[in-house]
Amino acid sequence: MHCVLESGHISQFDTLFRFRSKLNFFLKNWLTDGIFTVQKFITMITPYISHLTLHAIKAAIKAGKLILDIYNSGYTTTYKEDKSPLTTADSAAHKSIAEDLFETDFPVLSEEGREIPWEIRHQWHYFWLVDPLDGTKEFISKNGEFTVNIALISADTPVIGVIYVPVTGMLYFGNAESGSYSLDCSLNPVNPQINKLDKLLEQCNKLPYPGLPHQFTILASRSHLTPETSSIIDKILKEYPDSKIVNTGSSLKFCRLAEGNAHFYPRFSPTMEWDTAAGHAIALNAGIQITAWPGSETLKYNKESLVNPWFIAQKAGLPDFTG
Image (cartoon, rainbow, N blue to C red; front, side, top):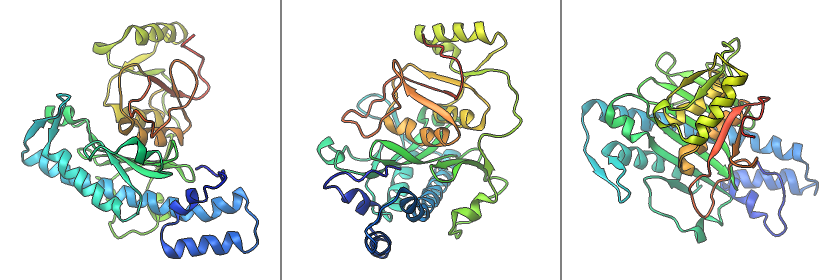
């Protein structure tokens, strides 16, 4: 969460505290003594981050159930201008999530929503970034590796991430205050009436999982290796000869990293911001480093172009395999 007061931009905080009662509480606790501290700000925002995380979790699960019903019953497919597929499940999930997130009073930028000009977007301090059905091709091929992705962006950084896997019922989520967690909703369904994230956390597993195997695992597709990816894998194999390469859906790669079940994910092909934002937040708050490549800058969001640069996501403390 950004805790820097920009000159003339108190609206950065106003945006977070849209609801009248929350804004009154904020003003009372900050302005009465005229003293602002990071600790005081964190104390005040924590309930709202928790509330928003829980709200996004419920929205993702609700959309996931809708997707699964369509997956098991039948759907129609059309094609966008870029020739990528669009199913009735994509559209239904988008509508459901947009309606649920509308209640938070933050704008929603969705892959399946209307295009929003940069002139409007660059004024946003907080907004939801959504891929209502990440992995439409996987949905059509019936391999089960598709997800619902919801992230809350603060300025250019994802501060909340939620990924739900409709077929398995696995839920992954994370934020800067609580860290990252997973929950098997097929065994422990989330009660729609639950109103505190802390209660949900009692059922969840903290990420990364403890005591996992140490075999070095690379997340990449053997059938779609770019020269850059092959070069890095060769360097890894020299350092870790028994490494294995595992292929899985894009959002699920971030989840595998956050779990501790994988160590290295190079992505040297195009992705969009809504493809990565939720996974970025979950992996980041589980100790994973995510940087643009080449270079060492973290991925930024709400850029004029929503196309991501190439990037590497990896467990902290690994050697530099890119040099």
